[in-house]
Image (cartoon, rainbow, N blue to C red; front, side, top):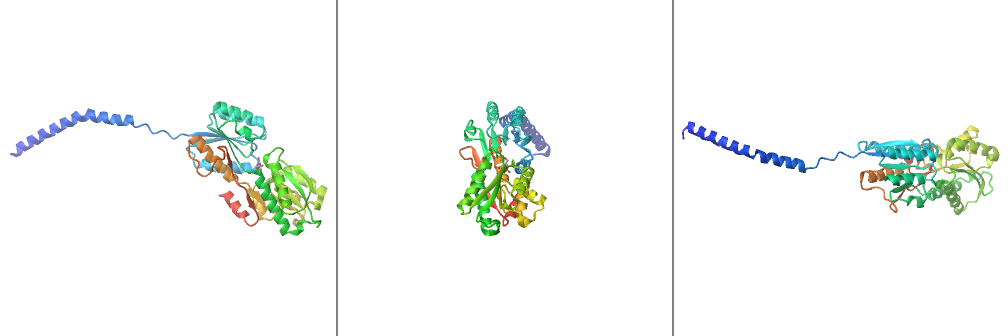
Length: 358
Ligand code: BGC
């Protein structure tokens, strides 16, 4: 075949192929279109809004808890936003705040009730608008929690903290017989009580006392004061007790660390030398609480795992709002998550302090 003829033939084949290809174009386009239409558009990642209502933002334990919760949120910033409200100890204010959160479109609400016996307005509102609520730290009664299947509670078992506090106090009394300063075979004590009606207040005191009695110690109660979990209130009250009882106080049983620290402030303020201080025990294992244990100012405290509670609350919020499976925490009766307490003494206080700070 001559070169000229081969070229003519090739050119003819190319045109035929081109024509065939051109003919297939509509089919090709149709397939492309089908593929494009058939494949659902990627859902844009859902961002949820979480509302948090605290009874008092200046409460040390609660502010540490919120800080931890915030730490969890920071890692998932693209999936959620949060709004925080401080009720400043008014249930009425908190009810209004929850209403506002619902109106603002919050998908999940976490509530640290002011009055744990008055959750009705919040529950009714949440139920009406279908917004699930995770209550935390201030425990509502079971009957209220079971009023709707989308209500939950995250916290701890008060009796356990009292028992552990009693153990710490009993062990310290055994190891240091000089705690019984007047040597009458009985420990004279005072109680710093948290708050009227709070599940952690009365129960902690009761279990602490009973644990000490069961350990074979003799106790004599000199007095008790309500200091509302607050350091300054405790300082004032303890100053008055020092004036009244002086050296007779051998043990101060405090329902939380902040009040125990208030007692220490009072002894410092009164310029009473350390050897004359009574044994002081707290509960919470807050940062300043752990430090006081390390410094030997407090005999011990009980770790109230606010980091664990914040993480559990976060996991629950993700489960409810983002339909994620619960991995680390388990709901008891489909409702409760309770974190265990732990004993903190001079030997392990550093570990707990580090846990808080990382
Ligand atoms: C903590 C206290 C805190 C209170 C607030 C208790 O569980 O031990 O420190 O002030 O909760 O509700």
